Image: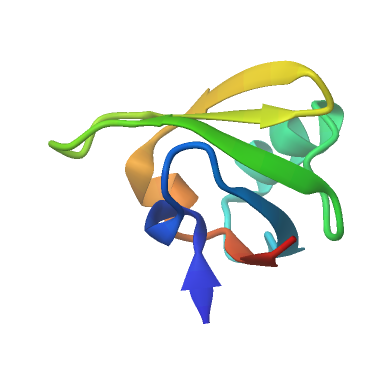
Length: 76
């Protein structure tokens, strides 16, 4: 299993599962288009556990590292 935090900057991946997120965060990400099967690109990942910036359908989205660890992905 690979999660979003294991992705390097600039890598593109497909979302496999977001069911382990809090329901409110899952709904928020769904409103941005982040759902099973969509393609994400890791734009920026901080070293000391700060937020990750991902791109989905041309939108930049910042999420906490602990939430990114709950998003299962696979190589695109």
